[in-house]
Length: 513
Image (cartoon, rainbow, N blue to C red; front, side, top):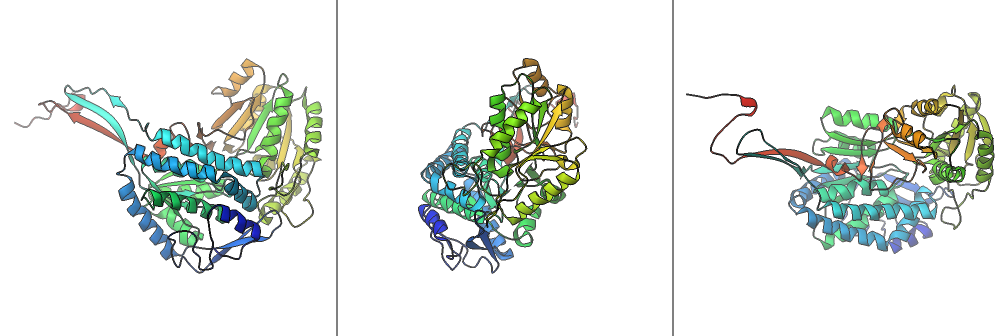
């Protein structure tokens, strides 16, 4: 990481205990010559360069993988509660660094300060969850059909896990995977987005300090590199039994196919085209708040962002007026300033995607009710946009990573549910209603087809206690809570014969006279 950084970035990194150098090393034992290629990180707030990062070469990839494999040989022998104690200490270190690490997320990615700090809080919560989990990696005891036999299952670590993350949650998604994998006995290789490399480096520095204190360096590892030197090798490497990847559906298809060729495992958390249904009897104040955060939070760049709403025809006109008024009051600007509700898109490519989508919306007959413009200045700021849509608009079935909200009217609840489900993605969904019948219909087998289904809360802001992920083109993977830990371990069924006989299952006879 280069020392040619902005003062703001240097101040934040200083608070994190990181001292960049021109030789490409940060704190601790980093590879001396990682590679020659350099990646620049820019702030979406004003377009200015924050700093430079040296990319890993093919040789650096091999070195990191070797270290991760060696660390796994030792780490897997530690009792899980002992591993949990290390993660507890990592969580405590993150508690101390919540504000500066949250500020770095805001500076590099563009989230408002409270969202940046909220993402770090999610890391802390995951650490706490993982500590408890370290004493709950339970297997089952089964009844054998043979006398004098006992059956049970146990779980063992997988090995080196690859964690590929997207820019929109540059640290939290890493924690969903790495914290759980660690208490399961795995080591991880973290490949962050090229749009947010500094946050990845900051996390690695924090991990290095804590791991060194417990003599377990190599449990957490970082690789920032090109697709040729890092991305493709990681996907195709048989030494990495599991790849957990978060990103676009297009990226997920490529990774899924690559890992499948070697019969490896994947946890895929991909795109979402999330919808909220609002019934006539809903608490409209609650619905308005849920839709606003879901559609505008993180400038529309969450996989759980609300992209479509279905309003009952009896309430649509009045509710749309309230939406337009609320949108006009949203403060947009420097994400590190107090009082801002929306920061910039992550970079110029994201702005271009948004602008292009708005042109398509107009061509396909969508009526822009509010917004629809890029804001002046050097930053990547756009207006949040409300669009009155119709079912013939093909773009409404795509995921545009921008604060564009499509509004539909409906008259029949089951028609609205079918329309909500009529997209390729299946991540998050919500209904606002006071009707028990409507809520249960939405949650039934004929209701929402998404991995997440909410009643009277929005599509965004999931808690870590539940398994996170979705169906269809969202990939089917599950991360974070519930029993998602099983994805990072291998199941072993054990049968013990404590009798003096050798009966076969299913009554098979195979006697040799």
